[in-house]
Length: 179
Length: 262
Image (cartoon, rainbow over all chains, first blue to last red; front, side):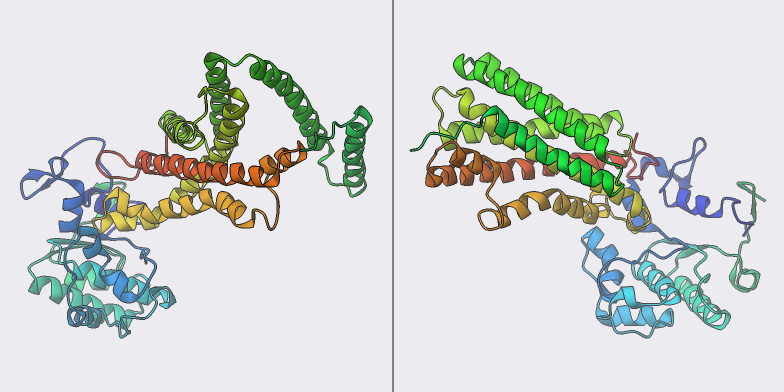
């Protein structure tokens, strides 16, 4: 947590190795991430940006795009529907993703990252476009899902209620430093 | 075969009168473009007069060195024109890629065309070599120019989408494939359009020139088909090479998107 411009999103991008620090080290499982293949790393430490990125095509195309990138076999439609349910997204897989509302797109991006089963999930304000009730349920489901799959969840949020309810470790940021 | 109609001095003057009327209309309509029209007309006239005399000299004194020199000058001018036409600032790496893709694409197409299709003897026969090279270089210049603008604009406009794909574990090539494809389509569009409309909507410049100078339309068409295929080949090859290398300059060795393309 922290005020706007304090470096929260930048921190997530550093962990996803989408940007590199000017100095210092970043270790993952005691190994410097600079020695790791950045593309493989991003598949294990996956980030979802605050403004969801939706690709051309159907909801299904969007859900399996990560698998297309890694050239792995895509999960079954049943699995896709289950993850969508976790994110309270009741939509047909064949529907065009572009027709979804802002909140639905955010949940689709969240479902897509969860479906990839990364070791670490980096979520940048995942509930910013959701109403309070939906946000509460979705975040609870996401936390339960990540616990069940033994994943680490690092989340940037402005929502103190969500932070108090779900976070095991609070990190506060101010002026690009951890407090 | 009839001889070409040689235009008298007053006939050419009449053609300029046509432009003068255009300038008067533009002025009356208060479209502030008279200066550009006058400049472009003057420049075109001077360039063509100079080239005319130069070509007469080259045709009368066929020499491989002069022919190659003419091609190199045309090529350098075309590359410089691409740099100038691109609105975004081009980094040194991007400039090198533009020059390399233009050179490789044109060199391969020209070699194939001169030695396999036309089988010129001698190979440097300037009457054929220079105009054909001119058409291939000119069209490739337009193609790469469009490819450069579309690639740079696409990478800027769709930065969030590229980053989003990288976050999901895409390689830089995968993340930029949509933009590369769009840039390729845009670069090829003028050539494809001109092929589709050829013969029905308009008669191409080379063919018109040949027919006006007394060549049989059938012979002119044979050359036009061959040249058009050479142009399509050269434009596609240059643009593909440019886009493959050019899109890599937007990423660093850590598969991260660079902030600026310098």
